[in-house]
Length: 474
Image (cartoon, rainbow, N blue to C red):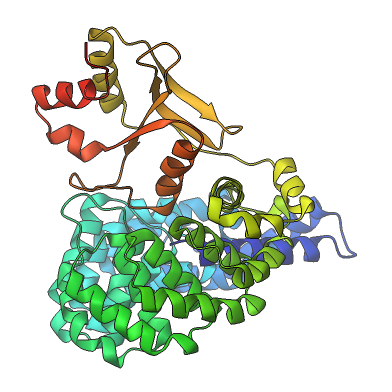
């Protein structure tokens, strides 16, 4: 998950804006002046004599970058680009700890320049992880996740294999970190990695604290772990420390339950009680995560929602990420449509609705698997059904992949494809898609949800049967 990274980015932007609007030279001139000063102080060599010299220069560059906004902007300079390309080409000369330190430098700067990652650093990561001590290998993978380095695919596959091969050498904290890293480096193609880490973690759950337990729950849910014994032990461990869960831990745990739709009654009741207390201390993104997860779980207890809505009412539309804006809109739609949410809906101030309506927010997207869309539509055309692609619902909050009507005046039909779901899944894996399908049904649509992976493994006959099942019998 990326919430922490997004909050950090917003925070960085506010600090820079405050600094640049203080008394002093105009913004453009100040940026140029500071940028030149940082480049001069970094003393980037015109030609690298050794990769070690390159690492030292990278460390100087990133340490000084704060004076000219961010490393990302500084790296746009042509001199910096040339230096980074030269350094990337020499990364094969760095030892494993130096490679880890290189990733760490850019992780602290919150930006990995593509010119160095794609130019040589990525190719050396598998070697580094193989030779690093187990916990250092996990640390490197976590830094990659923080930097959202999700390609090249072959490099990520080797990273996953390295982490799984070393589970016997990891302690409880290391296993937790490995599971979190794998969850954030996805989405993964089948087979999804992580089984070896999960199996090893089962014996350590009782030794983990609230922070690690909630992190494990969210990571395992994100990876789609369906090992029932693991979840039973994890739920029991969370229930045993539920009163110690801080706001972030409550948010992560609720999001994990909303993702898996595994809902142990005792844990849910305890979490709702803890949420009522923790909501008063929550930051905006934590309250939003809780409200979004509670909507997906169809839980609308008044005391907890009163605190959550107060926190959400403080939102600033201009600071919302695209994901956060969509989540707020889904929460408000759940409160509007769910019969059990009427008390919570009555607490929503008009100012919150107005703030979202005024925001420049981006909603859903059509399925990005063109081949699946085309194949499905071909069958509809063959049987004489007129259809539409990409119909927008609720001001573009939802885009329906394929819509059609089978009879005049009949209920509209919606086909929604699951891009990342397993072929045998019975419902969407992520809360966004789960709420989308649920909301469309509450709005009067007849919804068919279909994982793309299932469509791909179906024969031509199975595909035709699957489509024709939606049509009226003659």
